[in-house]
Structure formats: structure tokens, C-alpha cells
Image 1 (cartoon, each protein chain N blue to C red):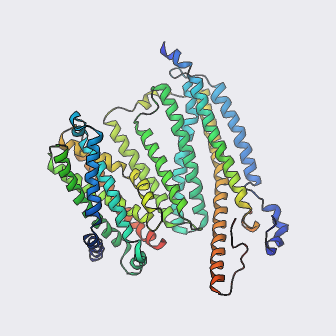
Image 2 (image 1 turned 60 degrees about the vertical axis):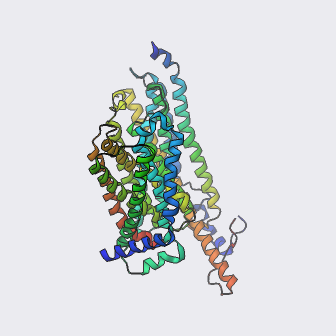
Image 3 (image 1 turned 30 degrees about the vertical axis):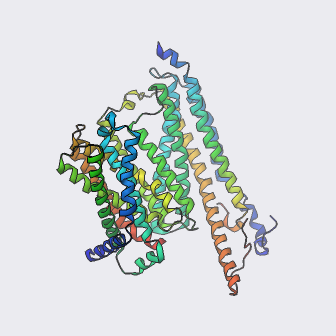
Length: 266
Length: 51
Length: 222
């Protein structure tokens, strides 16, 4: 870093606590714990647990599918909660949390859909059926994509009411869509998923539990890092905004009140 | 039995599912860390002290 | 409150009467969709008649998105949003007024499309009580959710492209419910028509409440 302004270089003594990345001792510990449980999860899920009586090895897809589905909906609800809190408090942190959890929700909803259709092709012989849960999860994915698209075009450092309202609406939307689709399909056919779902016990239950733990740790680790990225983005946008205002002021010949570091952001 | 025939396909599906999931999370994690590093350079140290 | 609602609705409808964007552009587009469906699904094969309720509501949704976009665009021009915020009108009243105006336009579109379906697809309209109730419920539902999402993307440069992506997944339950109710009314399939109509009505109430609550924050924001 060569282009730092002098007043920033005065902070050199605290530089050890201001790393050039989003990591911290806490995330390093969390990351290692996540990696360790991931290995354990792979061993339980792929090696130590027996194949299912009905589904044989296909059941192993469930050890990925179910935790990621739970995490996807967790991300969605977290986004709505953070959006609601932003509307009350209007503080940057909640906006950053909403952004981070929505993106994580999209990652895990993608995994859910992919593993779900792989499992479906093995068990039902087709990648896609208009099953109630499948359909509403797909719509959730589209809504998350839309939410992130809205966030992308809206540039305001401290968060916006639009993003917050849309984030808050995710929960009622998901509930209404889920109920209506469930009802729509149940009039045609009984849910086949329920019947095929295995009754889990023993090693398989352990594989599930370890999978949940590993998923939760990975989710937490990713969430912290993504939250810090969102936080940094806000700082950069704020900085750019101030620089632009200062540049405009300088153009108009008004004496500058704030010191500009870079008028042209890289 | 058809289930035994199908069973031969299972490892492929299971591997695709697991590798796909781990791969996606890995790529996303990598991208997030990279984004963090890039952005960090543009932010004064006082605004990125993680406690 | 009622006066404010009427005021905003009257403003939007008066703009429509003068500019005739919905009448001259959206309505022909809606009819065009019906023609496109007929080209895609050969009328002689009987698919059209079976699928009429679904095609009808898809046409309503696609044309409706344009009408809603137009309604959102009205507030983007010439600092209208600021004027609205400073006008002293209650934000929920502004929201409900805009919903009323959009609903009126949608109802006109739907009647036009119903005539179109009856003529072009040879659909026999029956079960008029259920048809009318579903029409009203779905119209309010689409107008309420549409106006809320229109305000959500209003003032953004990407408004035109963003609105359908955000709005259509949300309206999926309305499409399902209204289609089932119509099928029941027309007798194509035996379903619980009134229950589906109730679902659409419930959706409309949820979005009328949510929009009234959120509109203030959205007006302030942009």
C-alpha cells in the first residue's frame, strides 16, 4: 500500500489488528472446526454408514440434501429478520447481515435443488417432478436471485428501504407459495417423497447429525466472512460517495470541507 | 432385479452430489475471501478491525 | 383517508385517460398473447380449450406486469415521488389509491381477454358467480402485490427488467388459485373452486396490508 494518506499511516501501531483480509482468530478456529467436521461427515456419510434397505447408496445424497435445505431456509429467514431489524434500527450491520445471509441462502438452495434432482433421478427416474417441496424451493431460489439483483442495482452505503422491504417479504412469500403449491399438488397426487423417506437410526442418524453440525459450522464461517465483505463494501461505497461529492464541490469552486484521498476510485 | 442394475449407477450420482456441493461451497468460500482481500485494500485500517 | 385514496386513484386514471398507454399498448399486447398461444398450440387439437383457464391467467399476468410498470413509472417522472411525500397524503392512502387505479385497468383488461378467449378459443363461459368472484379477488391481489413491487423498483434505472423477475414468482399462488377456480367454474376439472377463490382473496388481503404498512418507508427512501 503506497497511496495511503499520511493521517492513515499514523495508525501504524494498530495495523496488526487491521488485517488485509476478512479473517480473524475466531474465524480461523471456526474454519478449522468446520473442516474437521466436514471430514468426519464425509467418513460417516460415505464410508461408515450402511446403505439403506430400500434406496441402497442413494440415501447418501440425503446427508447433503437435508442439511443444505435447512441451511437454505435458515438463510432466507435470517435475511427477513435482518431486513426487519434494519427497518427498525436503520443500522448498517443489519443491512450487511441481510446481504450476507441472502447470498448464502442462494448457495445452499442451489445445492438443495441439485442434490434433490440427482436423488429424484435415482429414486423416481426423473430429475424433476412438480412435487410441492421441489416447486416451492425452486421459487425460493428465483426470489433470492431477484432479491440479490435488486441489491445489486441499488447503491446506497447504509442500506435501503427497498432491499429491506423485499427481504422482509421473503418469509410471507415463501409461506404462501409453499402452502398453495402443497395444496395444488395434493389435489392431484399424494406426496411420494414422504413414503420413500427412510426411517433413520444408528450410523445413519449419526451421519445426519454430523452433516448438520458440519453444515452449521460452514454456514457460520461463510456468514462471518461474507458479512465482513458486505461491511467493507459499505465502507468503499461511502468513501466513493464522499470522494464524488468532494470532486463536485471542487468543480463548483466551493472550498473543500473534507479531505479527499482519491477522487478516482480504482 | 432392476434395483441391482440401478445400484451400479448410485456411486456416480452420490459422487456428483457430494463433489458438486463441496465444490460449490469451496468456490464460493474462495471467492468471498478474495473479495474481502481486494476490498480490504481500499478501506482504511480503522474500519476493518475485526474483534 | 377515503378522499385521499380517491384523489390518487383519480390522478392515475386521469393520466391513463389522457395518455392511453394501457388502452393503446397494453390491451393490444394482451390480445396478441392470446393469438401467440393459438399459434403455438394448434387450435384444432383441443389443447387450447383444455388449457383456456391457465392461458387466460398467464395472459393477464404478462399484460398486467406492463400495466403495473406503467403505474410505477408515473411516479418516477418529474419528482412526483417527492411531491407525493410532501403532499401530506397518508402513504397507505397513496398505496391504496394506486392499487384502485391499477385494479380498474386490470379489470378492463380481464374483461377484454375474457371476450377474446370466448371468441378466439371458443370457450363456453359458465359458473358466473365463481368467475366474477375470482376475477375480483385476483384483480385486487395482482394490483396490490404489483403496486408494492412497483414501488420497490420505482426510480431505479433497471425498473423495467427488474419488475417481472421480482413480481412474477410472488404471483405464482395467484396464478395457481385463479386458474383452478376458473377450471372449476368452466367445468374442465372438478376442483374446490370456491376454496381456491378464497386463497386468492387471502393473498389479496395479505398484500393490501403489507403494502399499506411498507409504502411509507418506500416513499421516504427514494
